[in-house]
Length: 306
Length: 285
Image 1 (cartoon, one colour):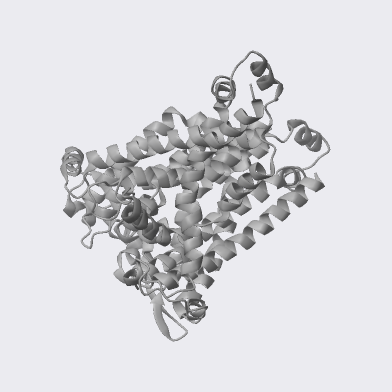
Image 2: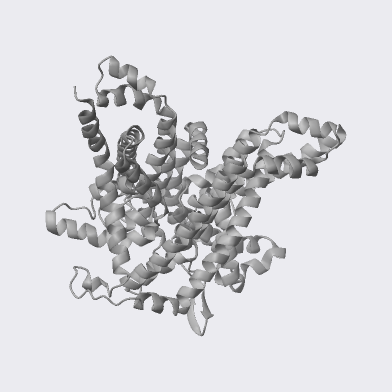
């Protein structure tokens, strides 16, 4: 039996299904997408008719469009705040559910639960909470009456809406990140804590000098996981705020909570400017490439240190 | 000792409080699913006066032509299950040949799959639609607005991460195991399905959980491939179709959300140990 020939046949036989699917939905559209970002692609030029090469026009126009610049800036701010809040919350939750309290497992499940539901549906739930349930509290209790005032709606204010996005993102994601921290915390040897306790180290010292260094690797993982996911946020953005309320930026009225992914979608479909949406997606992609390169470098460096 | 007792009491109260806060939104969905249109806006934080309204609302959603709950649910189940079967089946066999074949082309293909993980959906989504249209026009295979196109898309987008995970696991399986089977006269294909595939069980679980949660909840891809107002809808599409409407019927929207959440939560509670383990494993890889 010709073993190498059999191997070669099996190699291509086993690879072909994923290769076909991958080429069809990732590689071909990806190459088309990069190409389209340099053209005048629009819904009328879909079939290839009237497709013109226009160089960097889509990029220069995007970079001089206040709404795109705003979305870029907003996405960076949102990502920074979100990463910070989610990681602090998740680490705190992880410390709670690994301490010697009763019902730890029940708490873990409870904190994890929002993660199972899609961002779209969660966004609608929270839209109801912010627009109806919280004002409803103002109707029940006298001292909360200002909440019932339509002027004080959280989603009617831009800054509060951004914080609302962070709050919902944290609520959705914290349980998952918590589980990663839990796995890391449970791998810290108990003897280490016992020894430190005997030596007179208090809780804070043990946290700073034992726990945090021991779970440092988990921090790298969760940091990049939350970073990339926050940067790509779309579903909650659509259903919770849909980009609103409006605000002014560089003298132009724009959507106040429109993150990059939503801006790309709206540019292509609402403004009917497919080519420019494509150029924006390309810039979006470049940022993700940079993040990934940093991530690979950091984890390599850490591996060497260990 | 009393100091530690006090400390743990504080921790217990904090946990319980946070637990209530985390689950409160679910509670708000439940109580408001049992109200009529008037009381849901008038008294969203109060208990429902008549719990039987819950069943009337459920019946309403069950038969609503906007939600098409039954067909949406079946479509979501079908798309998720078929995609997951295809992803685990095809990705594991691909990862296996990629690990066991030490050629330049093999490592180049693997690197391509891994590098593609950085590609965001936003850069491929518009060309994907026109490309699917071109495929339909030239070779007559209809991929837009079909289950086939949907499942193909999930296999294409899900395979990178899945191959990466299988690859890491298969590398740790000693090659002697396969050599022994070869000596016993098993074919290459037979070796994979009889010997390797069953060993992959723990990693199958991870791949199923990560892809399953993503596919079941995914909104944008079905929105683009299946389209709005199509005969075939998934659960997230159906909910947004209804909830995104201009006039907000919160009583029914929340009922439809409840009906979208309950199957997932029930499924999770049954399989929670392996789901959590699978997700944590997936992140560490």
